Length: 355
Image 1 (cartoon, helix red, strand yellow):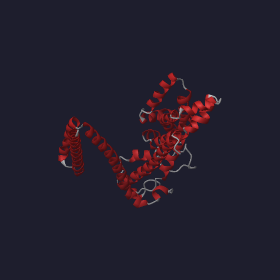
Image 2 (spheres, helix red, strand yellow):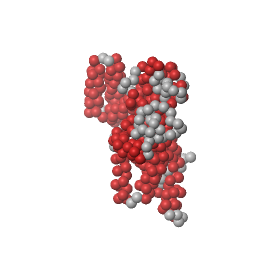
Image 3 (cartoon, rainbow, N blue to C red):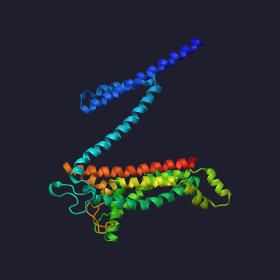
Image 4 (cartoon, one colour):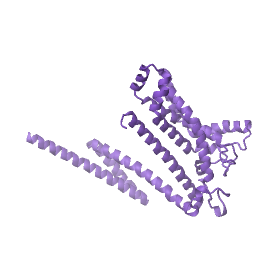
């Protein structure tokens, strides 16, 4: 018995030593690859090939250890890349912040963009345009998305649900430029010809199309939240004599309200960060409408469209201001994402009974 125990301990010790060697070799080769790549060395390929060889050998001899190391490296790489992107955005926006200070996001006097020497004056018009477009898109996506989720989850027959739900999810895969082209050729033309809008592009048409784009996100997340409500709650409500609609209205929807709200917030984030559709549909005229909430005015620009439309020709302080616009957009969308994650966590905690 003692000899068998010693052999088992020896085997586990050798296995741990082998796993440690695989982990160390992979870590060193990745570190060397990153350092040489950052230095612009032509020898970057050498440690990269060493990493590939280590993974191949480790997968054959120490598959479990290699899989753990690869998943760990993938996690570290994801966090590192996101961190580098954020640091790069902040660093490149510093010159514009130093030149303008808070006026970069608060100045409302003309000139609003440009000026003497190409100086950047204000992102405020684009922030207002982003807010107007997002509000319109939310007013479209939120009620329709929640209604669609309730129908798919609670009312649709089984065969209808099997067709409708995958169809809604497929809508999320349609390229945004396709939505934008439809909006340009149909919505913009309709509003211009029928309502005599000042320009052929306006925030209302763009917000309407972006709201349609956000619908699949809202429907999918909200439907998942409604489906997560325990059947025992629904059966208990039906057992006391309520109808199916009363159960849906008074039990299912309130119980899933946190998840439904998270879906709406994710849809808002999608609307706020949309670029191509808005770039195609808006008029790209900078300024404040009168009144400021006029969605049909001849001024049309958002934070995303100004970055996409002017990034190719920008330089110096102009480019720095575009990076500052990206920082404003990033912070706003990140806040919405954090809020949606908190709401989802709250929903799971409430449904799990842990208050």
